[in-house]
Image (tube, rainbow, N blue to C red; front, side):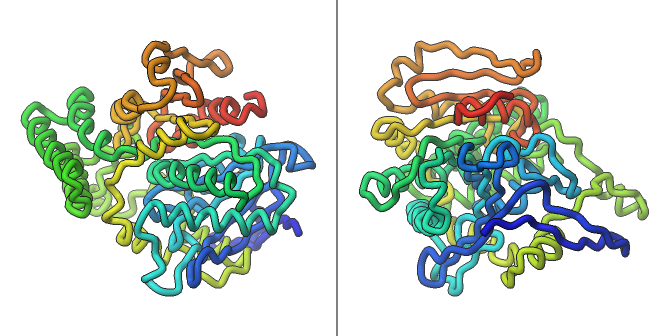
Length: 423
């Protein structure tokens, strides 16, 4: 059964009818293990009356513990924005979009016992394959529809592993679906490559001075040594300390977009009544006070999200570049990597470094090839470079959240990877 969602929204005492957007929708929970439940929310495309004519795109948020059904949906690419207004650049105008709160414990997803949280990337991937088996059993019309998984941040680390396990499940006959490719956006694939490039990146931007650069770089090299020695919990703790030092030196430098203006919160405290420029609803209000009753969900959103990170602390700093290499060497899956030039937490320099070191069949071709620029509506939006099934996109005027920072550039990438529509 397909649903069109309408719900009653109360705003400042005024009641009005507000839709979730011009999409037919389905949602549900999948029990992937005993006591472990994944929530999913599908938006059928508005591009056609026959959704199976367009690809199915799964979106996975980062964190770990970030909710795809909330942030990815409302803040980045879903049919409605955080003001609950229609989004002109929504992906649903071109494809079917499936938001999944992954791993268990994220968003509306939940576990019944703490022992059921995931502690490794491999466990996350196994859960996701189990989820997809149930999803396709419920919606078999999508089995032959091209499937792509796009993601952001830690979602990229999960997506790489999921793609490998999913391909193995397909080859073993456990799933009969049309899995085509992945899009790794500003992804935590090689955490140490991001961290050791923060100091030079910030120094070149003028955010830190020479003395601060030396101290920050030294701290990053200590983190690298912990990674090299396989001291994973200590490496995660060193990452937290390094982030704290960056914040201290840069005052309010935004890890997700270095050009974001910083508000003097102390000034706001001293001057009560200063209006907040952000008029959007917060995620908690949307998900718990609006979405939850509209979708008739008993589970509260976000109650276990912080615990998701805690249980993955020893896995957090582990790289998955070897998994990306397996995908390129052993499968026919398209692997697209894209990065916003204004991102700090997963800066482009760090991403280029691990991509350039990949050991895959077309590595020599990759080193020889030159990148080209791409335009949309006569504006330059970024650069790209290809070799075999690997393509890298440098995205201009975008930070960590490419779909919201440069939606036209992101839609171009989406079209190129899915080979399905024109921008």
